[in-house]
View (cartoon, helix red, strand yellow):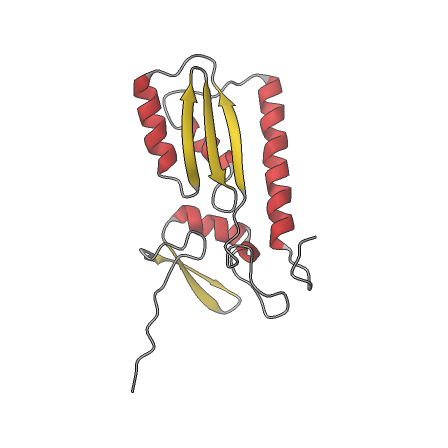
Length: 165
C-alpha cells in the first residue's frame, strides 16, 4: 500500500517553507502561506491563485506573471548606506525581481501578482529616506496604483473560454 506524498506550498509564491499559523480557508479549502504578505495578497485577489472547475486554472497556476518596471524618484541622491537599507527591505518582499539605483532614482522590476507598487512604496517609506512628495508625484503614483488594481481585477476574473475580461 503506497502513501500519497504531497508538499504544501504557498499558493502565491509557491514556496514550500510555509508558516502553519498563516492559514486561510477559501471556498472550504485550507490554504497555508509563507508570509503575511502572501496571505494578504491571496485575500485581496484569491482567483489569481486558485482556479475553479468552470473556468479552469488561475493565472498563477498557469505559471503567468505580470512583470512591471517602475522608476521611483527621490528628492536627493541616495547614499550607499540608505541604498543598503532599502535594498534589504525591498528584497525581503516576495515578487521583487531586480533593483537598480541611479542617483535620485530607483528602478524596480516586480511581479504584480506577488507585490504592488503601493507595497513597495510602503517598504521604502519605512526606510530613513522618503519618496518625493510633490502633488504631481502623488497623482502619478495614485494613477499607477489604480491601474495595477484594475489589471489584477481583470486577471482575477476569468471567463469560460479561459481568457480574461
